[in-house]
Amino acid sequence: SQQGEEDPQALSIQEGENATMNCSYKTSINNLQWYRQNSGRGLVHLILIRSNEREKHSGRLRVTLDTSKKSSSLLITASRAADTASYFCATARNTGGFKTIFGAGTRLFVKA
Amino acid sequence: GAGVSQSPSNKVTEKGKDVELRCDPISGHTALYWYRQSLGQGLEFLIYFQGNSAPDKSGLPSDRFSAERTGGSVSTLTIQRTQQEDSAVYLCASSARSRQGLNDNSPLHFGNGTRLTVT
Image 1 (cartoon, rainbow over the protein chains, first blue to last red):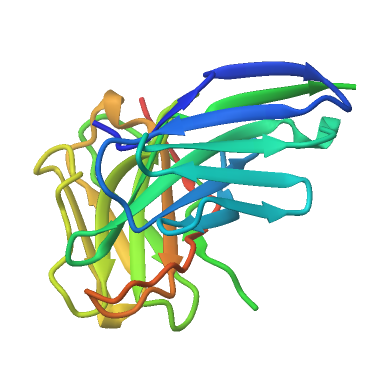
Image 2: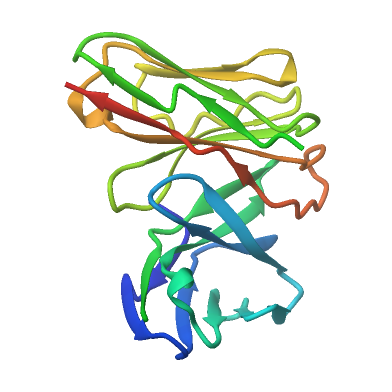
């Protein structure tokens, strides 16, 4: 089974509102990453948070990580219609390499 | 610079035929991944290459699936005797992650995928 699980599965909001997506995982990790995917094609890396970090910011993105609860959240502030996409969390753990496993994703729809 | 390149972008094949999917990673990237994504679903891990180490094949769904990485660069994913359930987008990603055991936090860079349709 996949390592990460996101919720909600789908989220619809108005432009200007904040969007929060959550991710839970099962095992210890080295880092957690968030990716964005448009139109079912290649994913684009958004932000990476290391296991010893608790919060990280990048522009309108804010990621938190709680290793005790094995969970992370991605907050997109002041959302725009162009933020409409699928968002995936991915975890990497050192198993002799750094295999990266993805969750099922959250489909975000921002209405103009 | 050039990103990860996958070919073909689309492939339609008849059930029972073999297919080869190609991935050209970013130059110098030592790690290479293959994932499979069915419509509206998440990414299913297939196989992971890291440098000269033995690949992690734990995600390959059956022995009809195999992958090679020649010279530490280009990779080919081969599906033999394709079945309709193999229809999906196959995504390749590379990363600058270095040797095993090092705490390396390089992100993955994805190609645009190959959409495989088995009729």
